[in-house]
Image: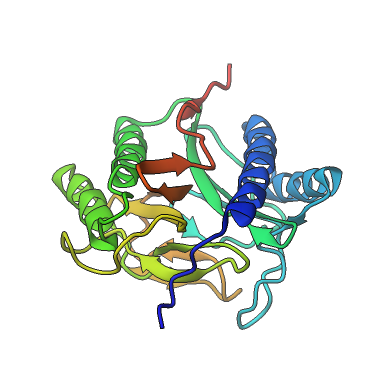
Length: 264
């Protein structure tokens, strides 16, 4: 029996509703990013906006060694993903800020991420931002019925490495629905025509963490926050998409959002 979770037309309608709410909330969180803002304030805002929209934050309470204590992950520079919001951590000029967020709406999950540069970003970080976004969005174009998860991953990895960067191997994209992580997994690396075959009705989170240096990471004592081992910066982009008979639909469409937040 296949482990792939194919969604019905009724389920897809709910997921589309959830995605629209999730994008609206993330847009307001992004608008609050500026120099001097505490990550705990962004996390609090995420909770308030979820309450306003009548949804639940998807990440709060996710099981681990300890349940995840935040409403979202705000990861800065060499912190790659799963950052626990900690008092005293604030955003500075030139930071690369990853905003990773999702909700639960009518029993269905969302999960998506953007990275923004704050103000004057150094040229290497700006290149990392642009390549990270381009690589993942190029991967989306392989999310076609009949293609394979390896076609997506190979596209992302090839673009990253040709640009002088790498992708994390330990953390991967995934299907999503009534659970935050469903099958199949979608690595940001691999060989063409390998992995799981894509079918209409799949809802996928296509993501990648691009790193400026080595692709190894360390987990902090909070059991969640993940940093690059060499201290070099990273970006992350993630989109939810729906595989259709004749293409794909981007459900959490943040592709037109600017990469740099003007601090002037």
